[in-house]
Length: 337
Image 1 (cartoon, rainbow, N blue to C red):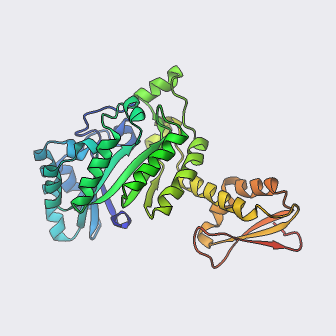
Image 2 (tube, rainbow, N blue to C red):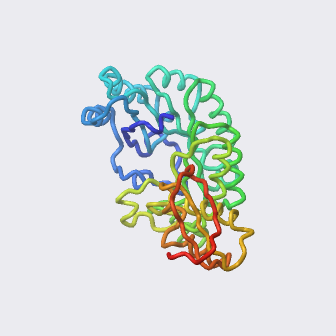
Image 3 (spheres, rainbow, N blue to C red):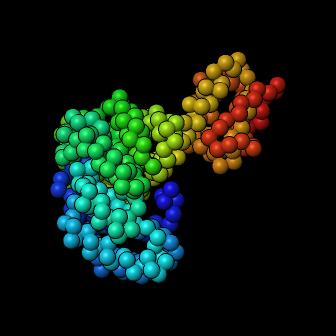
C-alpha cells in the first residue's frame, strides 16, 4: 500500500468543492487558511527531505477543479519525479467529480491513489448533510477508479446528521463490497463556523460523542478487517486548531484510534472469559505492542473485566503471540498486580 510510504502533504482547502457540507470547514480541519498554489507545491517539494515519497493533495476536491488548474498543480510536481523525491501522487476528491477524461489526465501525470469522500451510503443522510451526491455516485466512481488501475481509498463518517449506528454499520458493509484498497473512518466532529455547529446550538443535532464513536467503530472495524481492507485512519488527524478549541463537540480525541483498538481488545477478552468461573485468577497474554491497548486508558479494560466476570485478579502480560490476539490462562493463586 502506498499509504505506508512517506507522504508529503499539500492542503488545498475547499479548492474546487462545489458544496458546503453541514460538517465541513476544511480550513479549520486542515489548519490551512490559504489555498495552495502550484508555486506552493514547488516550494514544499524543494524543502522536503524525501526520497521516492508520495505527494498528497488533501483537503479539497481536486478533480472538481478545471482540468487546466489540475494540470498546473500536477505539472509543478513533475521535475521532482526526475529528481527521485517523489514516486507517485495521491489526491482526495468527491464521487460526483470523476469521469474518464479526468482519470486519463491523472494517470498521465503520475497519480496512483485516489481517495473518495463517500461519507455515507445512505441517500437520506447524504441529502441532509448537503453532500450533493448519491450512494450510486460512489459506487460508479469507485468502479471507474479501479478499472483505470488506481488505488482506491474510501472515506466514511460516523454520527452524521440524520444517521445512526445501524446506518453507519450498513455504510461500512456497502463500502467493503466495493473492495477499496483502504478506508479512512472519521467520526463526526462539530467544527466552529459550520452549519452543523448551528444545528447543535439549536438542539437539532445531538453530538456524536467519543464514547458513541468508539462503540460504533468497534463494530465497523471488523467489517473491513474481515474483508482484508486496510484501515489507514481512525479519527481526525490532530491539529493545533482542533485541539485548541475549534472542535467544540463531537468525537474528537487525539488518540481516537487507540481507544477503538482498546475497545476491540475488550470485546475479544470478554469472549475468552465468558466461561470463566467467578473468583478466578486470570492472565491475559498479548503481544508487547498491544499491552497498553489491552489494559485500556486508565486501566478501564482491566477494571471492566474484573467487575463483569467477578475475577479475583487479572494480569496483562506480553508474550510471543500475534498482534491482535489474546491468550487466556486461569492460575491457581491470586496474582500480584
